[in-house]
Length: 112
Image (cartoon, rainbow, N blue to C red; front, side, top):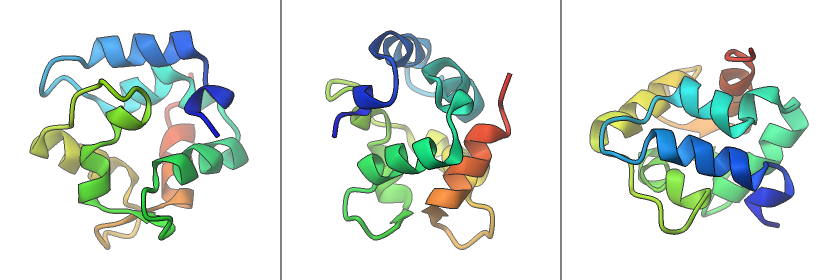
């Protein structure tokens, strides 16, 4: 599976363009521009599985650091503050991990 099987390559490119400089990544803006916020919970879970490197069912801060690279291999890593911001946006129970449901809720909360 490729990320472009569920998201538009143009939308991904636009989302990555908005946050190409360090400390410019904003989770809500990225979800909106990339199209994640328009997806169903099932579709967001498909994207989540693509991002979940170890297929543990959770994303931790180490996996989140490479979040943008899952959308385009040449994208930059998230900074520490951006990683923490993304974790805070989607970690609904405060356990330091994001499950597929947490990512779905975060994506849906920014629907336009």
